[in-house]
Image (cartoon, rainbow, N blue to C red; front, top):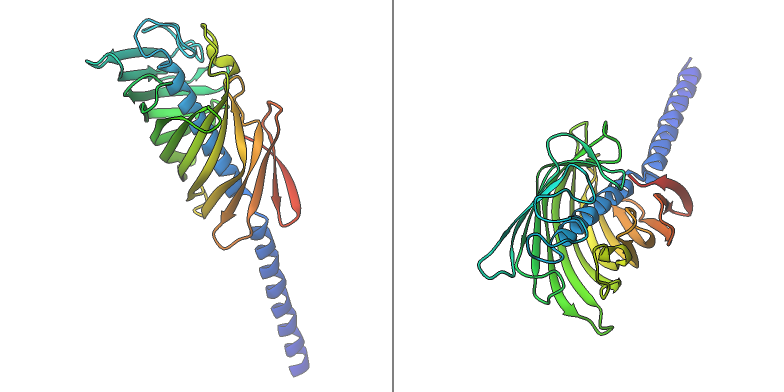
Length: 287
């Protein structure tokens, strides 16, 4: 009887050990934090593009990349409207980009609703200009039934030209993103953004050939409540004629776990990416 009891306990103990190892393996290869970071990255690159392009010319009634004049519809969306209030200097001012209270599908196939408020101290291209974007009941998503509420502030400063004679910007983000299940992703970042192509182009659709290179770091807490840190290991490439990051890699480390490498690809405009954890790779679709 004692032998049978001991054998039974041994089986139970072995099962517990196996279950724990299985859970640890599942946790070790969890890629949710990396996917959440990629989501936040994409959302705030989009916010910055809308903000920068809305003030490209810095005065009411002048066509720029995301608008066709004050009060008219954004090119990104046929239901968003722009209002501009210049300051007394004529260089800076305040802009309201209002997508309305209903989900609106833009030409980039993203749905948006709510408001982006933008303050700016000068022209986007001028050294020293500071652009601050804040969200007001702002939602965005590629599926109208799965929208993300975005709160927070993104601040950009034009730092002038670097040693390569390219205009570059310092960028900081402090944000919270809420999914439809009311889970919250917090995401904070400090970045450097270099304008590597398209800065000399003029005309109505001058932004179509703009390309940026992004370096820097980030940190946050995933929708599942797990803390993580991020360092860009190969500069991310953002082309404004594509809604996805097209190139670059970063290393994301969830607290207490092995670093994950997120690879955005080699330049193709698509939502394909690859996450590698400890030698195992997973293909993912960016949201």
